[in-house]
Image (cartoon, rainbow, N blue to C red; front, side, top):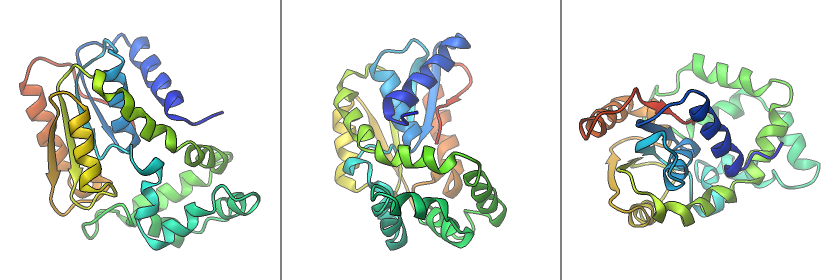
Length: 221
């Protein structure tokens, strides 16, 4: 299985088609934000508006390496034969927790229970192979930007001020998407749904006021 941007967009599009969803406000965080933007760019009939939260579409997909020195070291060896697979398989809870904490800004945003659950999920058979495939295909998310100019629905870009993206990269997205609006949530990191969930709810409400929509659809994290 190739875990590329094209694969994820195809799966979400098939889901929307299967449920015959139309006129939806599509909400996505991280790569989910980029999925939502690509669906809009391809004029999927389900998409009436998009809320893209910290879309992950910059620096050749290496944004996670900006989270911390530890993240940079871990994901820097992913493509090294044998070594990359070994490091990914031999994951320890304190390391996994530290990597996730690099995506939040507010103290306590990542609860111990959630950190432990994320660790358990990551230990499922086959997870490390899938994650390594995702990392190796990270550049496909930045290539998605080439399609943003085709978007013809209202878009709100919502970033945490401590997101891994840099201001110039955020502004590049805003320029690439016709009519896009952009907001920056203070004291918040990449996992905005943990740091500042109220900011996301406020953005959903504001977009919904713009016209009738179905219930918000989340395109992933």
